[in-house]
Amino acid sequence: MVWHRQRTRWMKGWAQTWLVHMRQPGVLWRQIGLRNFVVFQLLFVGMLASALAHPVFLALAILTLVSLATNGMSSAYQGLVFALDLFNAVGGYAAFIALSIGALDARERGALVKYYPLLYLYWLLIAVAGLRALGQLVSAPHQWEKTPHDIRSRADPGDARYRLEPHFGED
Image (cartoon, rainbow, N blue to C red):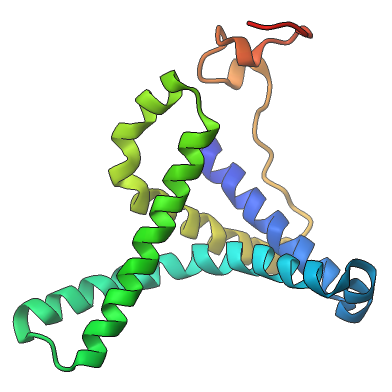
């Protein structure tokens, strides 16, 4: 599947970029400053860690829900931690949806909205791609899974966004 190979390549690229820049973290810090260094860490490590942690979160959430349904809440602390975890997960999904809504035109939003309930599956697939990327980073660091980018590989070659000739005016 093209999508899976592409996401694997992207995740591997994120990991490799982080590793290259972190060979000399002190140099990077001096070059970009403290603020940008922190943003760099949050962006790169956050992207990789959140993708890989997502299946763990889902498994723990399901286990906690089953435990709550069968045994009730064992402590207020358990309920608080679970509520915080759910708040963060739902907030993450909501942020992802809000960003996609802002980036799409009305027709695209209308076509995509029916898939929002499946967002957790998308992130599970991203996690699989992330695991593959880490495996490839160790076993074949110089191998990159190429994916097609020509006009024939597009979902809708008639879509004006995929035209090959330059276009400098309003649609």
